[in-house]
Length: 142
Image (cartoon, rainbow, N blue to C red; front, side, top):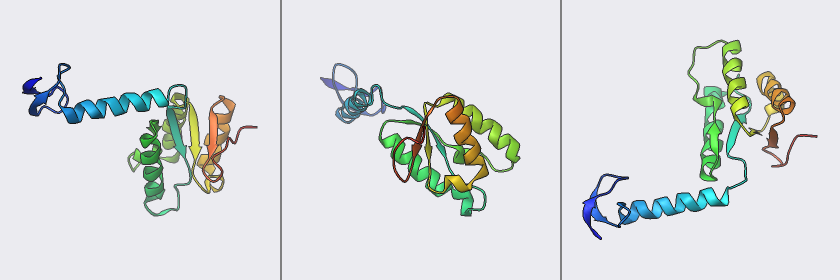
């Protein structure tokens, strides 16, 4: 071990032979362990739910679920990150592309009350994705 610049954080610290400081080395080990735990599990998850008619388009609920899923090792596709100012058709076009890139769709509470989320449900079901209900955490697929 010697004092060098950590390749991950750039800090001048005591680094291991692999060129990472102890903190970054630990983070890398934890990330590797998380990937190992998630091996074979759903990794790309789209979040669907009601937006129209909610304060700030329900972005808080979308972002909270995205943070939770990321913490579990998922790659999250979150429509709440899209910019304001598009038409409903443009949003749905982008969201359907996001769904095609996903392995599962997580449905927030009250998704059944949203025309867009219902359309996303039918599309995701048709293309064979895993469908997960927020209230029950079970698959919605028949």
